[in-house]
Amino acid sequence: MTGPTQNIWLIAAGYGSIAASLAHLACIIGGANWYRFMGAGEQIARAAERGAFMPTILTMGIAAVIGVWAAYAFSAAGMIMRLPLTRTALVLISLVLFLRAFAYFVRGMWRPDLSHSFMAWSSLIVLLLGLCFSIGTWRSWRTLSAVAV
Image (cartoon, rainbow, N blue to C red; front, side):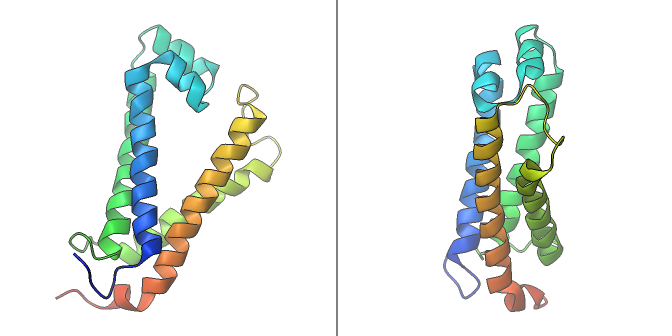
């Protein structure tokens, strides 16, 4: 479906969110070693090794939230039906992503069991995703403010 509201930034934000959500779900399937590889930290990996439910529930929750973010991006891009409070949701999603990206620069925001490379790469990825959401929101702002009929 193509239309006047579609833009590449929101489409990229949606697909990037799907990729992030699937990466989280892969940790559940892959187990402790996947949690380690993805940088979740040793405490989460050990809990997964013990068969604790906490890593699975936490990871499913994160994957679900990121999946909702993808739906809002696709909605704003005109690829799926209009979701409620789209503009508000996109602004809040952008804000959360930027706060997470810039937390890298705040001393003490990171647990000691997370590596510097994980912190740097994950912050860069989240920053790029935040840019896609925010630029896409800005470019669609006028269309998003129109009342859906």
